[in-house]
Amino acid sequence: MPKSREQCEKIREESKKKILDHSIMYFAKNGLEGTKIGDLAKTIGIAQGSIYSYFDSKEELFSEVQKAAMNNIGTEELEKINSGDLPPIRKLRYVSDFIVKNLSENDLYCAYFYLAFYKRMHGEKDEQDPFILTIRQIISQGQKKGVFVKGDTERIADYYVGVIYLYAMRKIYDPKISVLTSSELERVVRE
Image (cartoon, rainbow, N blue to C red; front, side, top):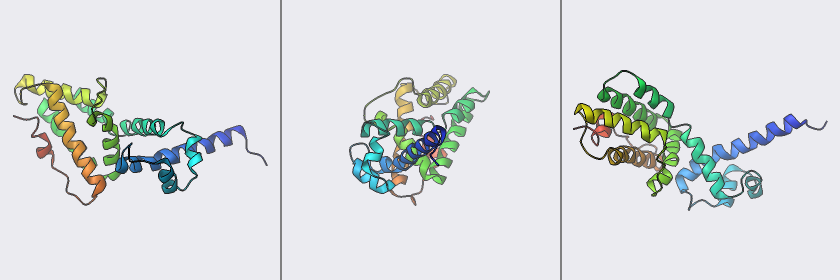
């Protein structure tokens, strides 16, 4: 019996999701430049042409992987923490605890974080990135209260995210590595 249009569409969506899911860790380990579609296809267990039936290029696939990563790094959780009626020092601790816990317990979170900020760490900046904006807001609040280091808020937020990025990358390559503590992470922000 032939498949219905809905069944075909479901199979197509599942196949695309499989490619995206398997591409996350592969891109995290190899980067955009180090990824060859043929090698990625072998890792997934599909024909190279199958990838191109869903994505026009490696760059398009990488862009989709980055979008998926941004959706899985906890931006909503950070925004909830920031919207609470807490002193900035508590907000920073909750954010740091959330991130450190995920880095420690979830290798996929490490890949998500690494991929979400890959372009930023390679020189491209997205001034509307909600994750970065939330970190900046918390830092700015703490600076106004005199509990966080003075200086350029954007630069301090980049330092904070850069430390997380470094540990995410290290954990991708060595899952047994000990991740820093929340207090260690906060050193770049606190006075």
